[in-house]
Image 1 (tube, helix red, strand yellow):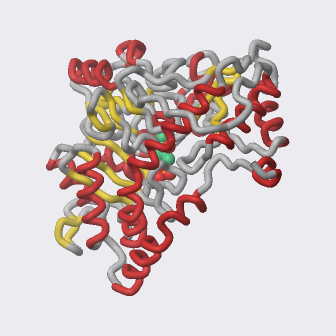
Image 2: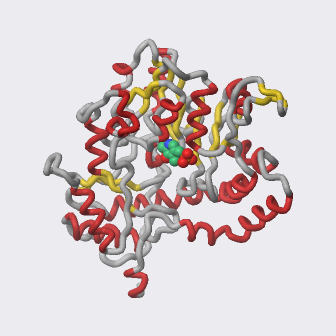
Image 3: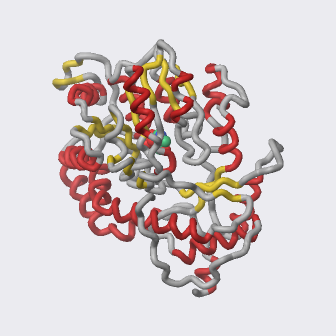
Length: 402
Ligand SMILES: *Cc1c(COP(=O)(O)O)cnc(C)c1O
């Protein structure tokens, strides 16, 4: 290891490295679109829709402008709107609950599980009212939510299930791909996601033909035939350039997700013995795709003004290591959702996680050397003996259970 490698900044994500692997094919495909003069909802989009539907074991894929639109259109296609309630976690990216609110329906938060960070099925039934229409679980950080109990509750109460699959493309729950478990699933191709476009893009997948047909109408101004508007819709089309980028990357997704699992295994092994830190856990029976590798920095000082996590983040940065906090304030305490009337203490797990979570560098091209440098820094900051001094080839653990 040279000195320069040793001191080079470790980013949380390195999209340049990914681009270098596929540059030639990517540029060729994009240029072909530019030269074709056919820019919106063309061949590339159709091809991507079929490929994503196949990947998610669904019959239909519907390309849209971004993942947030996918969530809004999912609710719209199910006629969920004013007077309706949708159950969703308070610990997720804001778009999950925003979509419900934008539709004029009410997000009803249910706390998350402290180990998986996902919607806690045991708390759902207490939140169901006669107005509840749907449950919207999120597969946060790439780990599938506990879908069997969620689907069982939804069935018993006649509720729809919309998966927010923005962070977990390629993941599996008990042998079934995420996206195929609920009535509908929403995917984001935001550039930092495991499958990222070179701009904004999104997709819906579903097994219901009628819902798919309605989504195609809604994404294009309510038209079945051009310039004949059966109902109001929006412009949320996917463009050919983004689809061409995504088609180029799609064959690499499984391999990239596999590499993320190897990186997670290196972290897990090296973090053993690190004090005041909880490494993420993987539920048996799921395949995690590690959109983020998120640890908890345990803060035993109670609710002081600044979480210990914030100073750990700063000290990592001083050592040339970037990290991120997803997400520093749970949704029920955000001003944007103040009208829902929630208060501090309503969702203790989400509130604790918001103070404790820290996402470490995670991308397929990350080396074991870099991972060990991150862990060494964490142990210096938090306490704990460094167990691995010299990096060398280490067999990757079998992936069963990841
Ligand atoms: C990224 C993301 C979205 C929104 O996707 P965009 O394409 O950015 O609109 C929604 N939900 C979750 C959980 C996300 O991570």
